[in-house]
Image 1 (tube, helix red, strand yellow):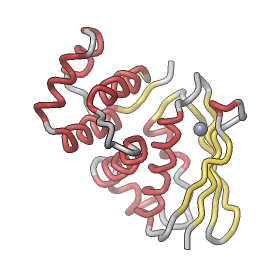
Image 2 (cartoon, rainbow, N blue to C red):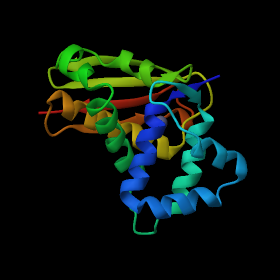
Image 3 (cartoon, rainbow, N blue to C red):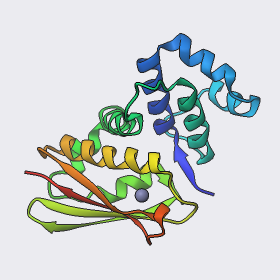
Length: 185
Ligand SMILES: [Zn+2]
Protein backbone atom coordinates (compact mmCIF):
# COMPACT_ATOMS: atom_id res chain seq x y z
CA UNK A 1 0.00 0.00 0.00
CA UNK A 2 1.43 3.33 -1.07
CA UNK A 3 1.82 5.94 1.62
CA UNK A 4 2.48 9.66 1.90
CA UNK A 5 4.42 11.43 4.65
CA UNK A 6 2.35 13.62 6.99
CA UNK A 7 4.46 16.68 6.24
CA UNK A 8 3.06 16.86 2.69
CA UNK A 9 -0.52 16.70 3.94
CA UNK A 10 0.27 19.39 6.50
CA UNK A 11 1.88 21.51 3.78
CA UNK A 12 -1.26 21.13 1.66
CA UNK A 13 -3.54 22.09 4.58
CA UNK A 14 -1.41 25.08 5.37
CA UNK A 15 -1.46 26.17 1.70
CA UNK A 16 -5.27 26.09 1.72
CA UNK A 17 -5.41 27.89 5.07
CA UNK A 18 -3.12 30.72 3.92
CA UNK A 19 -4.95 31.10 0.66
CA UNK A 20 -8.57 30.84 1.72
CA UNK A 21 -8.44 31.55 5.47
CA UNK A 22 -9.14 29.29 8.41
CA UNK A 23 -12.93 29.90 8.43
CA UNK A 24 -13.42 28.89 4.81
CA UNK A 25 -11.11 25.91 5.27
CA UNK A 26 -13.10 24.67 8.28
CA UNK A 27 -16.42 25.16 6.43
CA UNK A 28 -15.08 23.22 3.45
CA UNK A 29 -13.98 20.36 5.74
CA UNK A 30 -17.55 20.23 7.06
CA UNK A 31 -18.81 19.69 3.50
CA UNK A 32 -16.73 16.52 3.04
CA UNK A 33 -18.27 13.15 3.80
CA UNK A 34 -17.79 11.89 7.33
CA UNK A 35 -14.88 9.52 6.55
CA UNK A 36 -12.89 12.25 4.85
CA UNK A 37 -13.72 14.68 7.64
CA UNK A 38 -12.49 12.40 10.40
CA UNK A 39 -9.12 12.05 8.65
CA UNK A 40 -8.68 15.80 8.41
CA UNK A 41 -9.86 16.77 11.86
CA UNK A 42 -7.45 14.45 13.66
CA UNK A 43 -3.88 15.71 14.07
CA UNK A 44 -1.50 14.80 11.24
CA UNK A 45 2.08 14.28 12.32
CA UNK A 46 4.83 15.48 9.99
CA UNK A 47 6.96 12.36 10.26
CA UNK A 48 4.22 9.71 10.21
CA UNK A 49 3.15 7.72 7.12
CA UNK A 50 -0.48 7.98 5.97
CA UNK A 51 -2.40 6.07 3.27
CA UNK A 52 -1.96 7.64 -0.17
CA UNK A 53 -5.77 8.11 -0.27
CA UNK A 54 -5.17 11.15 1.95
CA UNK A 55 -4.05 12.91 -1.22
CA UNK A 56 -7.46 12.25 -2.77
CA UNK A 57 -9.16 13.56 0.38
CA UNK A 58 -7.06 16.74 0.09
CA UNK A 59 -7.91 16.93 -3.61
CA UNK A 60 -11.64 16.82 -2.80
CA UNK A 61 -11.17 19.51 -0.16
CA UNK A 62 -9.25 21.69 -2.64
CA UNK A 63 -12.04 21.35 -5.22
CA UNK A 64 -14.58 22.68 -2.73
CA UNK A 65 -12.42 25.74 -2.04
CA UNK A 66 -11.08 26.46 -5.52
CA UNK A 67 -12.45 29.57 -7.23
CA UNK A 68 -12.83 30.03 -11.01
CA UNK A 69 -10.10 32.68 -10.79
CA UNK A 70 -7.58 30.16 -9.45
CA UNK A 71 -5.64 29.55 -12.64
CA UNK A 72 -3.10 26.92 -11.77
CA UNK A 73 -3.60 25.87 -8.19
CA UNK A 74 -1.76 22.57 -8.75
CA UNK A 75 1.48 24.33 -9.71
CA UNK A 76 1.20 26.81 -6.86
CA UNK A 77 0.67 23.92 -4.49
CA UNK A 78 3.75 22.10 -5.80
CA UNK A 79 5.96 25.13 -5.22
CA UNK A 80 4.47 25.67 -1.80
CA UNK A 81 5.10 22.05 -0.83
CA UNK A 82 8.75 22.24 -1.85
CA UNK A 83 9.19 25.38 0.24
CA UNK A 84 7.40 23.78 3.14
CA UNK A 85 9.32 20.52 3.25
CA UNK A 86 12.72 22.04 2.53
CA UNK A 87 12.45 25.02 4.83
CA UNK A 88 10.81 23.25 7.74
CA UNK A 89 11.45 19.72 8.85
CA UNK A 90 13.91 18.85 6.09
CA UNK A 91 15.77 22.18 5.95
CA UNK A 92 19.08 20.44 6.63
CA UNK A 93 18.70 18.30 3.50
CA UNK A 94 19.53 21.08 1.07
CA UNK A 95 21.99 22.80 3.36
CA UNK A 96 23.92 19.64 4.03
CA UNK A 97 23.56 16.76 1.64
CA UNK A 98 21.99 17.85 -1.61
CA UNK A 99 24.41 20.39 -3.04
CA UNK A 100 24.41 21.47 -6.66
CA UNK A 101 25.94 18.31 -7.99
CA UNK A 102 24.23 15.82 -5.78
CA UNK A 103 21.14 13.87 -6.61
CA UNK A 104 17.93 14.48 -4.70
CA UNK A 105 16.31 11.21 -5.87
CA UNK A 106 16.48 9.62 -2.45
CA UNK A 107 14.44 12.49 -1.08
CA UNK A 108 11.37 11.23 -2.95
CA UNK A 109 11.52 8.13 -0.74
CA UNK A 110 11.30 10.36 2.33
CA UNK A 111 7.99 11.77 1.11
CA UNK A 112 6.38 8.72 -0.53
CA UNK A 113 6.57 5.01 0.18
CA UNK A 114 5.72 2.26 -2.33
CA UNK A 115 4.21 4.81 -4.70
CA UNK A 116 6.92 5.34 -7.30
CA UNK A 117 10.62 5.05 -7.99
CA UNK A 118 12.46 8.22 -8.92
CA UNK A 119 15.58 8.07 -11.11
CA UNK A 120 17.40 11.22 -12.21
CA UNK A 121 20.32 11.60 -14.53
CA UNK A 122 22.43 14.49 -15.66
CA UNK A 123 22.05 15.22 -19.38
CA UNK A 124 24.53 18.11 -19.59
CA UNK A 125 26.21 20.81 -17.49
CA UNK A 126 22.91 22.65 -16.99
CA UNK A 127 20.31 19.98 -17.57
CA UNK A 128 18.97 16.77 -16.14
CA UNK A 129 16.06 14.43 -16.52
CA UNK A 130 13.98 12.87 -13.74
CA UNK A 131 11.81 9.84 -14.30
CA UNK A 132 9.12 8.66 -11.92
CA UNK A 133 8.02 5.04 -12.33
CA UNK A 134 4.66 4.55 -10.64
CA UNK A 135 4.27 1.23 -8.86
CA UNK A 136 0.66 1.67 -7.93
CA UNK A 137 -2.01 3.56 -9.86
CA UNK A 138 -1.44 6.53 -12.12
CA UNK A 139 -1.04 10.19 -11.25
CA UNK A 140 -3.69 12.73 -12.21
CA UNK A 141 -2.73 15.64 -14.46
CA UNK A 142 -2.98 17.93 -11.42
CA UNK A 143 -0.52 15.75 -9.49
CA UNK A 144 1.92 15.90 -12.42
CA UNK A 145 1.62 19.70 -12.59
CA UNK A 146 2.28 19.89 -8.85
CA UNK A 147 5.28 17.59 -9.20
CA UNK A 148 6.72 19.67 -12.06
CA UNK A 149 6.38 22.83 -9.96
CA UNK A 150 7.86 21.03 -6.94
CA UNK A 151 10.90 20.04 -9.04
CA UNK A 152 11.42 23.64 -10.25
CA UNK A 153 11.24 25.01 -6.71
CA UNK A 154 13.55 22.27 -5.43
CA UNK A 155 16.13 23.27 -8.06
CA UNK A 156 15.76 26.96 -7.18
CA UNK A 157 16.33 26.18 -3.53
CA UNK A 158 19.51 24.31 -4.47
CA UNK A 159 20.64 27.62 -6.01
CA UNK A 160 19.87 27.15 -9.70
CA UNK A 161 18.39 30.04 -11.70
CA UNK A 162 15.84 30.36 -14.50
CA UNK A 163 14.82 26.76 -14.07
CA UNK A 164 12.45 25.33 -16.63
CA UNK A 165 10.86 21.92 -16.47
CA UNK A 166 9.09 20.11 -19.30
CA UNK A 167 6.87 17.12 -18.59
CA UNK A 168 7.66 15.18 -21.74
CA UNK A 169 6.32 11.71 -20.94
CA UNK A 170 3.41 10.86 -18.65
CA UNK A 171 2.27 7.60 -17.04
CA UNK A 172 -1.33 8.76 -17.21
CA UNK A 173 -1.03 8.95 -21.01
CA UNK A 174 0.29 5.40 -21.31
CA UNK A 175 4.04 6.11 -21.10
CA UNK A 176 6.21 3.85 -18.93
CA UNK A 177 7.00 6.72 -16.58
CA UNK A 178 6.49 10.41 -15.90
CA UNK A 179 9.54 12.14 -17.31
CA UNK A 180 10.57 15.71 -16.50
CA UNK A 181 13.37 17.41 -18.43
CA UNK A 182 14.96 20.17 -16.35
CA UNK A 183 17.19 23.00 -17.57
CA UNK A 184 18.75 25.99 -15.82
CA UNK A 185 21.24 28.79 -16.50
ZN1 LIG B 1 2.82 12.60 -15.52
